Amino acid sequence: MTGHPPADPSAPHDRPGADAEQRLLDSARDAFAAKGYHGTSTREIAAGAGMSPAAMYIHFSSKQDVLLRLILAGHESALATLISGAATTGSATKRLRSAVFCFARWHAEQHTTGRVAQYELHALTEENQAQVVRIRRDTVRVMREIIADGALTGEFAVDNVDTATLAVMSLCIDTVRWFPSRELQTHDEVGAAFASIAERIVRSSD
Image (tube, rainbow, N blue to C red; front, side, top):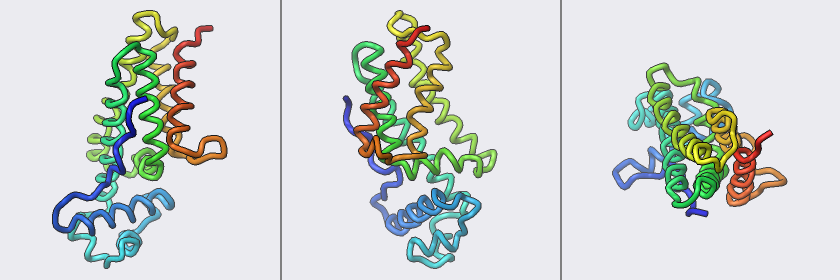
């Protein structure tokens, strides 16, 4: 398989104030994942970062700004990982397995970030949601192109490319809801297992 996906999408930048900003993002990520966006106060976010509520506004204009930053970063990182896996040369099967391995593995490794990115999307304003939707469409397109290529050459047997794409994408993304489990406890186990399942999905023809 290809290499591991990028590290946490909220990695600190080498600039003044980056450490404090990162602490706020980490605190917000954990709070949003546990209590939801609407159940989390800015005071809780600041307290989790060891800062005063007023200090948070030095780095972010609002709680909505924090959420947008987390969701954009999560989606961008997941897409970059998927593109990296899909870039593997070879057959459609090899590309699909590589793409799914990387994409599913990312959602296991970054399951807290992924949970916020997926389940708190509805809390964004309409304007902010539009920014994320563009990335989500690009993500679906990458996976769909692999499945469509395999279907075109006869390597895959799928009745509907869009439905097959939805099934494979959902398989990977849902990892954020339950990881880790008794059956799959490591990131690589998730990637390898789901790569095999994805191949069976596109090769089954009743």
